[in-house]
Length: 299
Image 1 (tube, rainbow, N blue to C red):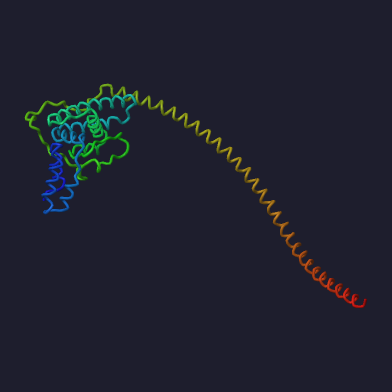
Image 2 (image 1 turned 90 degrees about the horizontal axis):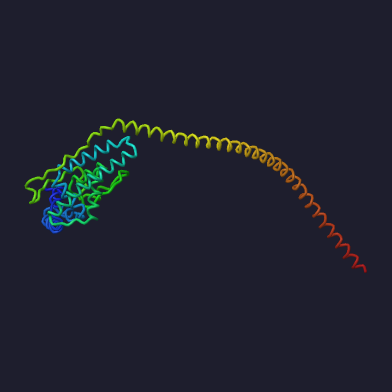
Protein backbone atom coordinates (compact mmCIF):
# COMPACT_ATOMS: atom_id res chain seq x y z
CA UNK A 1 0.00 0.00 0.00
CA UNK A 2 1.43 3.36 -1.02
CA UNK A 3 1.93 5.70 1.94
CA UNK A 4 1.15 9.41 2.17
CA UNK A 5 4.88 10.12 2.41
CA UNK A 6 5.58 8.26 -0.84
CA UNK A 7 2.78 10.10 -2.62
CA UNK A 8 3.98 13.45 -1.27
CA UNK A 9 7.52 12.64 -2.41
CA UNK A 10 6.19 12.15 -5.95
CA UNK A 11 3.94 15.21 -5.99
CA UNK A 12 6.49 17.67 -4.62
CA UNK A 13 8.94 16.57 -7.32
CA UNK A 14 6.61 17.90 -10.03
CA UNK A 15 6.84 21.31 -11.71
CA UNK A 16 5.05 23.88 -9.59
CA UNK A 17 2.23 24.42 -12.08
CA UNK A 18 1.44 20.68 -12.20
CA UNK A 19 1.22 20.17 -8.44
CA UNK A 20 -2.43 21.06 -7.80
CA UNK A 21 -4.03 19.14 -10.71
CA UNK A 22 -1.80 16.10 -10.03
CA UNK A 23 -2.65 16.18 -6.34
CA UNK A 24 -6.38 16.44 -6.98
CA UNK A 25 -6.28 13.65 -9.55
CA UNK A 26 -4.37 11.39 -7.17
CA UNK A 27 -6.81 12.12 -4.34
CA UNK A 28 -9.77 11.36 -6.62
CA UNK A 29 -8.22 8.06 -7.74
CA UNK A 30 -7.71 7.00 -4.12
CA UNK A 31 -11.18 7.97 -2.93
CA UNK A 32 -12.78 4.56 -3.46
CA UNK A 33 -9.74 2.60 -2.29
CA UNK A 34 -8.86 4.54 0.86
CA UNK A 35 -10.99 7.54 1.82
CA UNK A 36 -8.67 8.62 4.65
CA UNK A 37 -5.58 8.56 2.44
CA UNK A 38 -7.51 10.37 -0.28
CA UNK A 39 -8.44 13.15 2.15
CA UNK A 40 -4.85 13.40 3.39
CA UNK A 41 -3.55 13.71 -0.19
CA UNK A 42 -6.18 16.35 -0.98
CA UNK A 43 -5.01 18.31 2.08
CA UNK A 44 -1.40 18.50 0.89
CA UNK A 45 -0.49 22.17 0.53
CA UNK A 46 0.97 23.62 -2.63
CA UNK A 47 4.52 24.80 -1.87
CA UNK A 48 5.40 28.46 -2.05
CA UNK A 49 7.70 29.41 -4.91
CA UNK A 50 10.70 29.70 -2.58
CA UNK A 51 9.95 26.31 -1.00
CA UNK A 52 9.56 24.74 -4.46
CA UNK A 53 12.95 26.12 -5.55
CA UNK A 54 14.62 24.66 -2.44
CA UNK A 55 12.83 21.32 -3.00
CA UNK A 56 14.02 21.33 -6.60
CA UNK A 57 17.60 21.93 -5.52
CA UNK A 58 17.36 19.19 -2.85
CA UNK A 59 16.23 16.68 -5.48
CA UNK A 60 18.59 17.74 -8.26
CA UNK A 61 21.64 18.42 -6.09
CA UNK A 62 21.15 16.10 -3.15
CA UNK A 63 24.86 15.42 -2.75
CA UNK A 64 25.63 19.13 -2.60
CA UNK A 65 22.82 19.66 -0.08
CA UNK A 66 24.45 17.01 2.10
CA UNK A 67 27.77 18.84 1.82
CA UNK A 68 26.11 22.16 2.73
CA UNK A 69 24.50 20.60 5.80
CA UNK A 70 27.81 19.01 6.80
CA UNK A 71 29.49 22.40 6.50
CA UNK A 72 26.72 23.90 8.60
CA UNK A 73 27.25 21.30 11.32
CA UNK A 74 31.02 21.91 11.25
CA UNK A 75 30.53 25.66 11.46
CA UNK A 76 28.11 25.27 14.41
CA UNK A 77 30.76 23.24 16.21
CA UNK A 78 33.55 25.65 15.25
CA UNK A 79 31.80 28.73 16.56
CA UNK A 80 32.10 27.50 20.16
CA UNK A 81 34.47 29.84 21.98
CA UNK A 82 34.93 32.21 19.05
CA UNK A 83 35.39 35.93 19.62
CA UNK A 84 32.91 38.48 18.31
CA UNK A 85 35.16 39.31 15.34
CA UNK A 86 35.54 35.65 14.43
CA UNK A 87 31.80 35.07 14.65
CA UNK A 88 31.22 37.99 12.31
CA UNK A 89 33.72 36.50 9.86
CA UNK A 90 32.00 33.12 10.17
CA UNK A 91 28.63 34.73 9.41
CA UNK A 92 30.17 36.42 6.37
CA UNK A 93 31.51 33.10 5.05
CA UNK A 94 28.14 31.43 5.63
CA UNK A 95 26.41 34.19 3.68
CA UNK A 96 28.85 33.82 0.80
CA UNK A 97 28.17 30.09 0.67
CA UNK A 98 24.37 30.39 0.85
CA UNK A 99 24.44 33.16 -1.77
CA UNK A 100 26.40 30.88 -4.13
CA UNK A 101 24.00 27.98 -3.55
CA UNK A 102 21.01 30.30 -4.08
CA UNK A 103 22.44 31.31 -7.46
CA UNK A 104 22.63 27.64 -8.45
CA UNK A 105 19.05 27.04 -7.24
CA UNK A 106 17.79 30.01 -9.28
CA UNK A 107 19.55 28.60 -12.35
CA UNK A 108 17.80 25.24 -11.86
CA UNK A 109 14.43 27.01 -11.59
CA UNK A 110 15.18 28.99 -14.74
CA UNK A 111 15.84 25.72 -16.59
CA UNK A 112 12.34 24.68 -15.54
CA UNK A 113 10.93 27.88 -17.00
CA UNK A 114 10.39 29.53 -13.62
CA UNK A 115 11.64 33.06 -12.96
CA UNK A 116 12.82 33.68 -9.41
CA UNK A 117 12.54 37.30 -8.31
CA UNK A 118 15.08 38.85 -5.90
CA UNK A 119 12.47 38.73 -3.12
CA UNK A 120 11.95 34.99 -3.62
CA UNK A 121 15.71 34.49 -3.89
CA UNK A 122 16.06 36.14 -0.47
CA UNK A 123 13.60 33.59 0.94
CA UNK A 124 15.57 30.75 -0.67
CA UNK A 125 18.80 32.06 0.83
CA UNK A 126 17.15 32.48 4.25
CA UNK A 127 15.98 28.86 4.06
CA UNK A 128 19.48 27.62 3.20
CA UNK A 129 20.91 29.71 6.03
CA UNK A 130 18.37 28.19 8.42
CA UNK A 131 19.44 24.73 7.23
CA UNK A 132 23.04 25.55 8.15
CA UNK A 133 22.16 27.15 11.48
CA UNK A 134 19.65 24.53 12.66
CA UNK A 135 19.95 20.76 12.34
CA UNK A 136 16.15 20.43 12.28
CA UNK A 137 15.83 22.93 9.44
CA UNK A 138 18.55 21.01 7.62
CA UNK A 139 16.46 17.83 7.85
CA UNK A 140 13.44 19.70 6.53
CA UNK A 141 15.41 20.96 3.52
CA UNK A 142 16.87 17.51 2.86
CA UNK A 143 13.34 16.04 2.71
CA UNK A 144 12.42 17.98 -0.45
CA UNK A 145 8.94 18.40 1.07
CA UNK A 146 8.97 22.03 2.16
CA UNK A 147 5.74 23.97 1.73
CA UNK A 148 7.07 27.30 2.97
CA UNK A 149 10.40 29.07 3.35
CA UNK A 150 12.33 28.77 6.62
CA UNK A 151 14.00 31.35 8.78
CA UNK A 152 15.77 31.11 12.11
CA UNK A 153 18.40 32.90 14.19
CA UNK A 154 19.47 29.69 15.88
CA UNK A 155 17.67 30.71 19.09
CA UNK A 156 14.43 28.90 19.84
CA UNK A 157 12.68 26.13 17.96
CA UNK A 158 11.22 26.40 14.45
CA UNK A 159 7.72 25.03 13.82
CA UNK A 160 8.86 22.43 11.32
CA UNK A 161 5.51 20.60 11.30
CA UNK A 162 3.99 23.67 9.65
CA UNK A 163 6.91 24.00 7.23
CA UNK A 164 6.81 20.52 5.67
CA UNK A 165 4.09 18.66 3.80
CA UNK A 166 3.81 15.77 6.28
CA UNK A 167 5.31 15.26 9.76
CA UNK A 168 7.16 12.18 8.48
CA UNK A 169 9.20 14.46 6.21
CA UNK A 170 11.73 15.08 8.99
CA UNK A 171 14.27 12.29 8.53
CA UNK A 172 13.15 11.58 4.96
CA UNK A 173 15.59 12.16 2.10
CA UNK A 174 14.06 13.44 -1.12
CA UNK A 175 14.11 11.05 -4.06
CA UNK A 176 16.73 12.35 -6.50
CA UNK A 177 15.52 13.65 -9.85
CA UNK A 178 17.25 15.13 -12.85
CA UNK A 179 16.02 17.55 -15.48
CA UNK A 180 16.42 17.16 -19.21
CA UNK A 181 19.38 19.53 -19.20
CA UNK A 182 21.25 17.54 -16.57
CA UNK A 183 22.45 14.54 -18.56
CA UNK A 184 25.95 15.55 -17.66
CA UNK A 185 26.47 16.70 -14.09
CA UNK A 186 28.22 20.05 -13.83
CA UNK A 187 31.32 20.38 -11.73
CA UNK A 188 30.62 21.53 -8.21
CA UNK A 189 32.89 23.04 -5.59
CA UNK A 190 33.97 20.76 -2.77
CA UNK A 191 32.37 22.32 0.28
CA UNK A 192 34.29 21.86 3.50
CA UNK A 193 35.57 23.75 6.51
CA UNK A 194 39.19 24.70 5.87
CA UNK A 195 41.41 24.55 8.97
CA UNK A 196 42.57 28.00 10.02
CA UNK A 197 46.40 28.14 10.31
CA UNK A 198 46.07 30.94 12.85
CA UNK A 199 43.53 29.04 14.91
CA UNK A 200 45.80 28.66 17.96
CA UNK A 201 46.76 32.34 18.00
CA UNK A 202 43.14 33.38 17.50
CA UNK A 203 42.06 31.04 20.27
CA UNK A 204 44.64 32.58 22.61
CA UNK A 205 43.51 36.10 21.66
CA UNK A 206 39.89 35.09 22.14
CA UNK A 207 40.74 33.61 25.54
CA UNK A 208 42.49 36.84 26.57
CA UNK A 209 39.54 38.90 25.35
CA UNK A 210 37.20 36.64 27.26
CA UNK A 211 39.32 36.95 30.43
CA UNK A 212 39.35 40.74 30.17
CA UNK A 213 35.60 40.89 29.67
CA UNK A 214 35.00 38.55 32.60
CA UNK A 215 37.24 40.71 34.84
CA UNK A 216 35.16 43.76 33.95
CA UNK A 217 32.00 41.80 34.64
CA UNK A 218 33.47 40.61 37.95
CA UNK A 219 34.32 44.17 38.97
CA UNK A 220 30.79 45.32 38.17
CA UNK A 221 29.36 42.35 40.05
CA UNK A 222 31.53 43.11 43.09
CA UNK A 223 30.34 46.72 43.12
CA UNK A 224 26.74 45.60 42.85
CA UNK A 225 27.30 43.10 45.69
CA UNK A 226 28.84 45.74 47.96
CA UNK A 227 25.89 48.04 47.33
CA UNK A 228 23.50 45.20 48.09
CA UNK A 229 25.32 44.43 51.36
CA UNK A 230 25.09 48.10 52.39
CA UNK A 231 21.38 48.11 51.58
CA UNK A 232 20.85 44.95 53.65
CA UNK A 233 22.70 46.43 56.66
CA UNK A 234 20.70 49.66 56.44
CA UNK A 235 17.40 47.82 56.15
CA UNK A 236 18.29 45.47 59.01
CA UNK A 237 18.96 48.47 61.27
CA UNK A 238 15.66 50.00 60.23
CA UNK A 239 13.96 46.67 60.90
CA UNK A 240 15.31 46.60 64.46
CA UNK A 241 14.09 50.16 64.99
CA UNK A 242 10.61 49.28 63.73
CA UNK A 243 10.55 46.19 65.96
CA UNK A 244 11.36 48.39 68.99
CA UNK A 245 8.55 50.78 68.03
CA UNK A 246 6.18 47.82 67.66
CA UNK A 247 7.16 46.54 71.13
CA UNK A 248 6.50 50.01 72.62
CA UNK A 249 3.12 50.16 70.88
CA UNK A 250 2.25 46.69 72.17
CA UNK A 251 3.13 47.80 75.73
CA UNK A 252 0.95 50.89 75.37
CA UNK A 253 -1.89 48.80 73.93
CA UNK A 254 -1.61 46.42 76.92
CA UNK A 255 -1.80 49.38 79.33
CA UNK A 256 -4.78 50.82 77.48
CA UNK A 257 -6.53 47.45 77.48
CA UNK A 258 -6.02 47.22 81.26
CA UNK A 259 -7.38 50.74 81.71
CA UNK A 260 -10.30 49.87 79.45
CA UNK A 261 -11.18 46.86 81.59
CA UNK A 262 -11.09 49.03 84.75
CA UNK A 263 -13.29 51.71 83.16
CA UNK A 264 -15.65 49.04 81.89
CA UNK A 265 -16.06 47.65 85.41
CA UNK A 266 -16.65 51.13 86.84
CA UNK A 267 -19.12 51.85 84.06
CA UNK A 268 -21.08 48.75 84.97
CA UNK A 269 -21.26 49.82 88.61
CA UNK A 270 -22.27 53.37 87.64
CA UNK A 271 -25.04 52.09 85.39
CA UNK A 272 -26.39 49.93 88.27
CA UNK A 273 -26.42 52.95 90.60
CA UNK A 274 -28.15 55.02 87.91
CA UNK A 275 -30.87 52.42 87.46
CA UNK A 276 -31.47 52.30 91.25
CA UNK A 277 -31.61 56.10 91.42
CA UNK A 278 -34.02 56.11 88.50
CA UNK A 279 -36.36 53.79 90.42
CA UNK A 280 -36.24 56.05 93.53
CA UNK A 281 -36.83 59.11 91.33
CA UNK A 282 -39.92 57.56 89.78
CA UNK A 283 -41.25 56.56 93.23
CA UNK A 284 -40.66 60.09 94.64
CA UNK A 285 -42.34 61.66 91.63
CA UNK A 286 -45.36 59.39 92.11
CA UNK A 287 -45.58 60.25 95.85
CA UNK A 288 -45.41 63.97 95.07
CA UNK A 289 -48.13 63.69 92.45
CA UNK A 290 -50.43 61.87 94.91
CA UNK A 291 -49.80 64.52 97.65
CA UNK A 292 -50.55 67.33 95.19
CA UNK A 293 -53.81 65.65 94.21
CA UNK A 294 -54.88 65.23 97.85
CA UNK A 295 -54.24 68.91 98.60
CA UNK A 296 -56.24 69.90 95.59
CA UNK A 297 -59.21 67.91 96.83
CA UNK A 298 -59.15 69.64 100.22
CA UNK A 299 -59.08 73.14 98.75
